[in-house]
Image 1 (cartoon, rainbow, N blue to C red):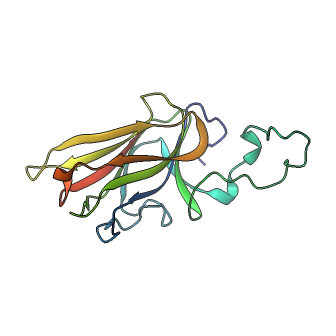
Image 2: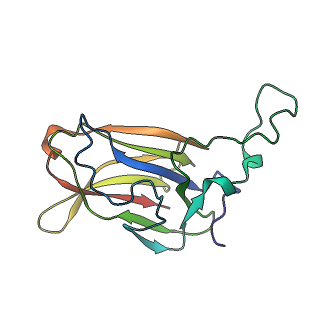
Length: 171
């Protein structure tokens, strides 16, 4: 199994890609939270794999600052929604790109849950697609420096309403 989640310094974890609009009507991606594996996503390289959150070794996360060993076998929430999320391997490199989706005219925010290394080489990008076939990176973020998934939110400029976009996760 190529997916390893034992070292958080060089891995990137992503879950629950969504538009957080005033209304959720424009979210047309078929599999934003990886609940159906990588259906609707294209992989390049050997970096990414879907992860069942129930199989993550929670012993690798920092111990609770409360002390004692009471917390040893208590499930450690990663912050994901659903059962699955995407994870990159420590030594693999590649990209994970979503199928194009519509940004609705009423959409105000793009949000993603991301965890992992805070280095610029590991990042999530929002690409706005042009009718001519190219794309522009409208926004990007890296991990928070911990494997715990944390929200990253981008306020969509008014001009992006009705645009087509894709998410590209880079490792």
